[in-house]
Each structure stands twice: as structure tokens, then as C-alpha cells.
Length: 144
Image (cartoon, rainbow, N blue to C red; front, top):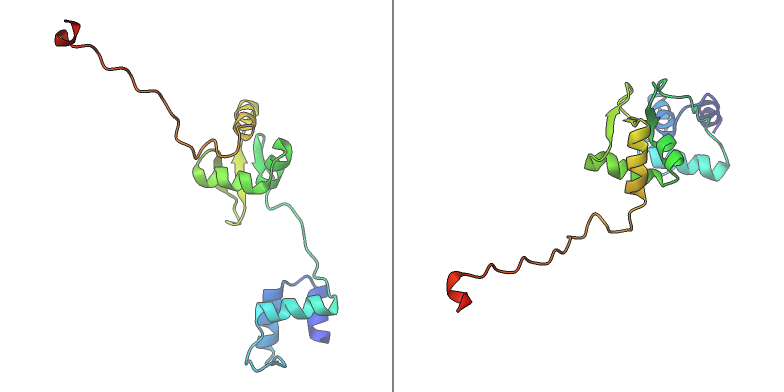
């Protein structure tokens, strides 16, 4: 437990703690040979040990660039919606240098378009639009 507390205090993640314990040759009290990430998370939770999260920005964003959370907050919508838009190609986005985070490009005109997109009713994009069929053109034989 002292090793787990020390690693958690140093800011290591559960995966890093499990890897360190396994590298040290320690074995979990259960009938397994190695520490797993979930075992470490359970120990941390049960013992009330907090890992330090470093919420430093991944990269400095340029003008008209947004993080997913930043865009979602600006548009007052869930982050899941922003991710959906990325995966559907509805916004211009690219991966940050860490290859984990998305950076979305949106100038004021694009933000207005995204607000309109956000304001559409639920299911708007999944439903097929109904258009009345065009009436058939009368043929020469029909006019008699």
C-alpha cells in the first residue's frame, strides 16, 4: 500500500501504477499473477487514495481553434454532440500533436452555422424528408 500511495502521490495513473507494481515483482492478494488496471483502480477507490490529475492544456490553440470541451461550452451543448459532429464530418477538426485530443476550427461565421445545427430538433438529421410527388404530366391522349 505504501508503494501505491507513493506512486499515486507522484501523479501516476492506475495503468502506470499497475505496471510499476508488476515491474517491482509484487503480486496482488488475489489469485492472479499480475496487477491489472481495474484492480489498482479498485484499491485506490476503496482506500480513498486520489491520483493527481494534471489538467494542463495539450497545446496552445490558435485563433478560431477550439477544444471539444471549449466548443461545447461556447455552444451550450454536451461534448458528446461535438464528438458526433467530428465523426460525421460536420465540423473541421484535426488531432492535436499528442494524437489524443481534437482541435476544432470554427470562426464566427462557422459558430453561427453550428448554433443553427445545434438548434435543430432531435432526430432532424436521421429522418428522411417527405416531398410530395410531382403530379404526372398529362399526355396528348389524356386530353380527350
